[in-house]
Image (cartoon, rainbow, N blue to C red; front, side, top):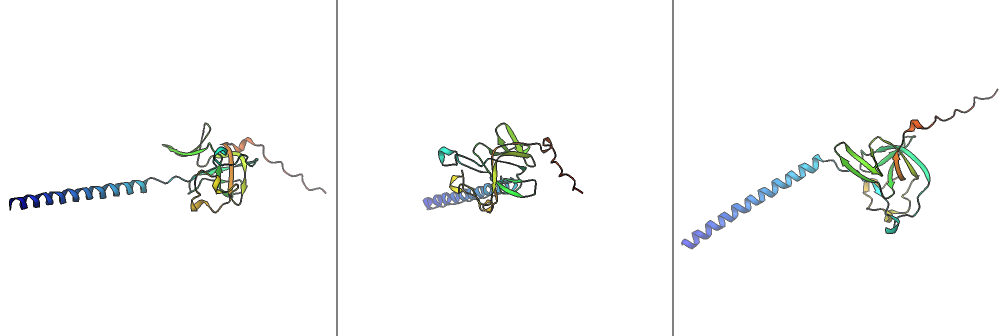
Length: 172
């Protein structure tokens, strides 16, 4: 009888420990979910692979400029006409976050939401060079296009440009 009592005590102790472990795991899981709900998800910066890994060897050479938008699911650029496009960057630029918020690191510059930026590139309705040339799969929220390819992205002050010349007044 003594052995049966000892076995019952061991089983009860094991059940208590197992119950404590389950409660601890549930608390940790709830804490992780709460932390991830408080922490915003970073938008996606689509980037081409380097040429040696299958990315393009040449990029469009137009000059693109606009205002950087880091508020949505994808990094976007709003041009002077109000058109918003998903950014596809050349390798080198990357998205990070510090105490001041999100930024794109490009060379030595930290480009933040609302920054006026410029670079080489061009606008496209469909992803040029195909999705297999990117460093990650394209999330569903970023697949609709249009896209703007931006290389050598840098800060840009639109006030540095002279104002456009007005057309001459109509003739008599």
